[in-house]
Length: 363
Image 1 (tube, helix red, strand yellow):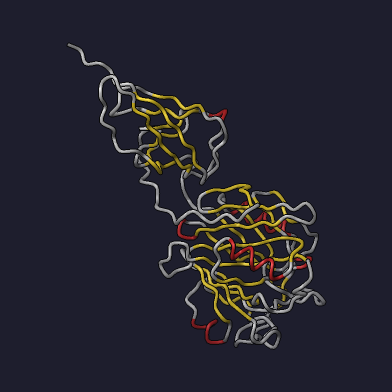
Image 2 (tube, rainbow, N blue to C red):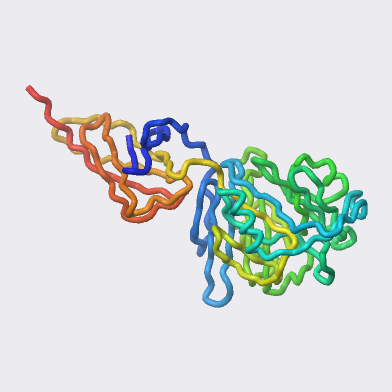
């Protein structure tokens, strides 16, 4: 058995240090492909944020959100100023919204949900008027909030991003697809080929979905943000992370991102609608053994090399100054302490090897 001293205890199932069982670690989807140049910025249960830097230009950011691990995407919007009852393009309403800063959205989001991870801009909207209208539909918690006004805009390029508790999907937007969808949360956008200054390097916010475990459902969602990219670049980066389908959200000066309270992609523009990402539920400190060798046959006088790999499956980072891992070497004879040489973030792993020297039997 293995435990992080003062923090957690890990065996083949995960157990708290006080020995109260919290259940085995959930099976996760396969590790995401990490394209060259991207590196992990932060992570927690079911969510990761990756970054790529450029010698000239602005960095790219990609969130990987595993809905099957309990992570979620919520849709937020500003206060409705005028209801626009029955004035929508698809038989519903077309209200006007007050806009807010992304910091205000984050503050409300984080105060209501302790699992808040990131918040980013969302739907296209009509900037010349205020309070403003959204261009395309959104549905929040089963209620159609707006149909939008843009049914005649890009008639063959509109999509919907559907969000359930454990999966997502991207499909064509139509009156039929909107009103027959069982998804409790929907946001509409555009295909990657809709010409929104397609060849210009400007702010981009794109969404993708990935069936990572190949079970027929898209359990992983991806969100891309940057201040300078063409549409083709944004779509290609999401595909390099495994996206099977992509959708474009509002960009330009609307593109912005806050993660864990830190503004990462900055803009002063007020916006009427956002996407808010939460990490999955789970213990702060937990782990699981990924690679454990078969119990070796111990022969007196012959040393045996043993290696294990442990993944941090909790919500918090294992920090060098907060503890160590103790291996209670059953069925072997000696205990081992592993002093952490580096911080281990959620989703990251550490490997440790040691040599077993069998004890002589007493005569």
